[in-house]
Length: 138
Image (cartoon, rainbow, N blue to C red; front, side, top):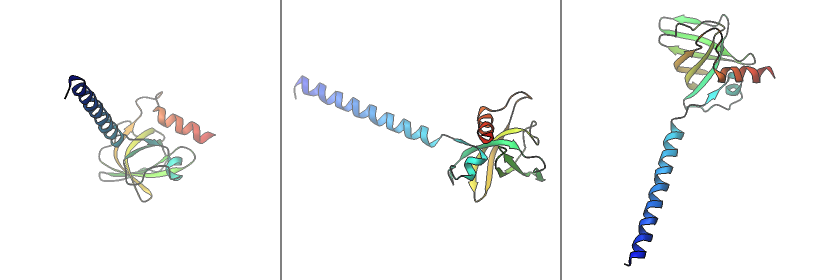
């Protein structure tokens, strides 16, 4: 092979390696993303079934039921409600009327949460929850 052919093979291999690396990176990032859905979007069937995603809104008044370490409560965006079950210790700021975001998956009509996050202070609301509440008003 000539010098020119060697360079062409090297360039082709480098391009193939770069394409492979980018493809693997995009697949890894795509499988680790958690998308946010409001209760209305979940009710409309937009949320993935059997995959992890985030569900957020306001904890509905009078919906919190505690049994040992298992807690069941409803989350609403003032348009639809969705029942969430969580086993574990809830954040200190968790209460009825509170803006929260949960991470978990949908099992039938119940959202099984693996993580519950509550807002930081009286003035803060997660942007996803604020957007979902704004959309539900329209």
